[in-house]
Image (cartoon, rainbow, N blue to C red):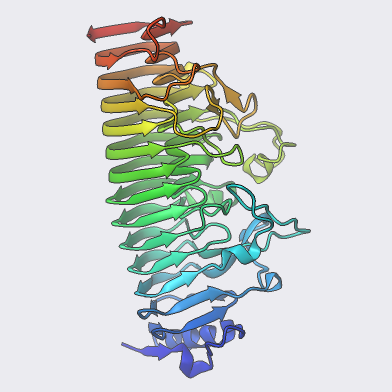
Length: 470
């Protein structure tokens, strides 16, 4: 194997030099000889601006090595989203590559706090910018095949940490990812139009979504996001630990999430469909979820499970932008169907929420062996549900129910319990609230209301309830 060391090409670990040119020379030299391993030396820290990977290259960070984003906004000029210049830039990039990997016992450090504004209670202000948001994504790979990320630590992203777009055959294993929980938009791993991906044995802490599946409009020609396996991960998020959406103009399907633990998160599991794409055939199993509220800077109201399909805000809203079709003033909305949850344990300040613009948009949602305990643990006000980003009301609801469901078809809940903790504010309510759910099948559903004067189950609108037992 051809092995090159960035130190041999002029890189210096002096906490001042932008080593991008030396790292790029090492990569290019290795690629010219058919590929090989580019070494970031053990125990040393190197600053670097943007550089690009090449096919058949393994970027290897030896034990204790640190590669840190260079603290100068002016060097980050390439948008992470093509012509959309308002959502970050590329630090480490690559496009149309084959056989690339990042390995070793070292760290990729996005130097995120440098790019932030004033520190607030549970977030940082975002700095204003003129044309391009300079905050760098740590890794952005577009249309790459046979990608491996193994063993490394990824930390302190200023925007998304690991962004894979239109990539095929991706293995992310045994990594630790530590973003600052106060940094907005600091997603952990984003799979965008990707297929045949495995995320296994990872620990992720993020100031936004830990793992997110989506189909962004800027890369619409790259096809669906499907055939994804996520297992054996521990997750902490100030937003949503496991998320599907909100950007989805294609198909997201055939995905499994298994053997994961979510703690200290604003929202646990979220399907947040806001565009014309569809979400189907998703399985969540053997997952423990613990949620708590944060300030309204962060989307979410401590919902352990959240499934929604609402149209996106109109074209003049700050959350619309590049997400609408070119020339469109309103968004379409796709269907969410064939979603199943099995052996899920939840402890949260809020209940499970299902909501859609019409009942046909959520179909065949199944819960089996779900245990939910609802108990207040923070001082933030509650009793409602967060629908952002959406065309209509950002927040809906007047109570916290164990299950709060509005507009869905074919919902089946079996072998499931709802309990209430000792801390119960007066807006805690029914075990189950169902409005326009047809049919709603309950089998061995055990749940009482938070207070004795309330009904356990409330049916409204066109709900048709079928109770098999209990």
